[in-house]
Image (cartoon, rainbow, N blue to C red; front, side, top):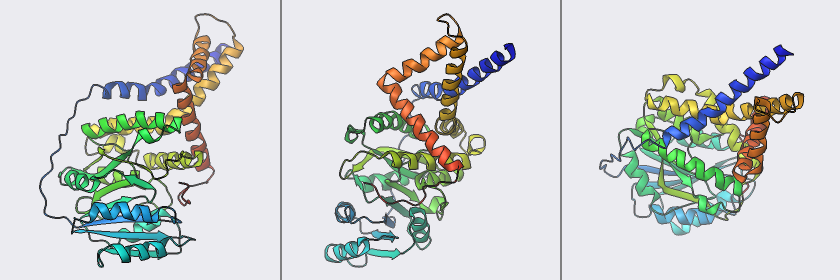
Length: 373
């Protein structure tokens, strides 16, 4: 019995120590001041391609194109490329018809093929692009005005290879979990970007400097193209950042589905694991702790939370005493977390991560999907 109790205590101590890594990191980041000021330099009209991957987007295609055209109309060096991959509706036809009647000929193109998959669309499109700056944005993302000018400014900084935006938390109130996650995540990513780089970007609006990071080719078997592109930049010694002045929300302000959250969680976790060496070998030493925290939070934390909860329940069941012992305090902490709304949101995030990880283990991947919003 003493041997079993000893192992339980060790397991509890180890899981608790790992669970505290993101807490300590968060605390330390709150004291960080901006290390990297905006160091934009003037560049003469960089060539820009706005890349719009689409699949079955009849509902969004026109309103997305309208918002894009308004943004790039005065930027003569910017062109538009709609990439339709595997649509079963009239996305490509609608896009071509709309652009031919509203936008200058020679500044846009619509290409399509039968094979679905956003990653495949990105790779095939980027392989033939010679633009200095590539901006990719999702069809369902309504991006705040002024985003193109901000992107050009930030990428003129010689240290920055990738810049992304943030989902506007004010438009997530109908989705309590997503609203909670966005507030916490956005704060941390802003801090990480001010200090160095962040590994968590947003594919709904992301841009990169092709002259700095080269031709982007993402792993087509993995989701999270945004995180993959950010890692390419970081590996080459450039910063990957978010800029809080670039915000977006989906056009219809719908609640994010549970399946969509699982898809995003799985993709990010896999990308973090594939780039785990950056926790020790990143060219910018400040990013190493950021990577350690990201792996701890998104990959290890959910499993440690599960182990901690099960271990607490088993230990208290074996010794159900309300006294100054670790089984009682452990089960009390689990119950307390479940009572408070923020704690329930945390448990929801843990559940999403565990499901996404389990699906990845058994071979169920989400690299090809139909739009849900």
